[in-house]
Length: 230
Image (cartoon, rainbow, N blue to C red):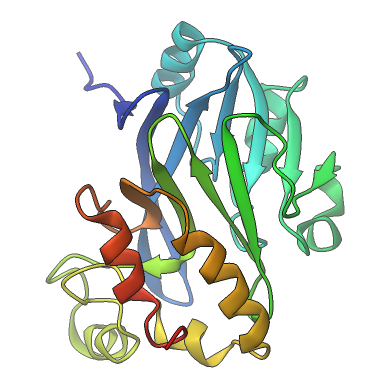
């Protein structure tokens, strides 16, 4: 029997690791989250490849009613999920609808939460992508996509290992990659967004590429963004 794809990460939230994704010659581990909303429907955050096993587990949990693309870089598997769950609404970060008109996004994510048990903040002012960070109140989990990343020791070899280290992607804890730090063209807007995120009563932190943080989450987030918020 295959091991389960979904792993509980708190009240009403599950994580699933997907296959590696290759970007510019670098292999990235991938992760998605599934959230059960107050109305009983399921929200799929940053969907990974949809396998038969994962689909069966989702069916056992409930109906997938919302798909969330938290930034414009995480669109690899959205068409597959759109086909599998045609009744689900796609809420996408700013910039994705222009990049992928074929997906027919239903709504653009903003700073106003679209579900009672979520809060959200748009981190504006970055030239690489505009990321929407979420807070799931029942579990206390903060969900980042690419603004926090970490690769396990030995993940890369040779020159790729050097590039990853210089990009701060092999730190002891997940960190903001150097390329994203340098890409902030409006640091004032970014500081305001991070200030709001740091005010959340976070208990744990999830990211699409990195080890989840399950202890002292607020202190961890303050350290991760101290370069931006003196």
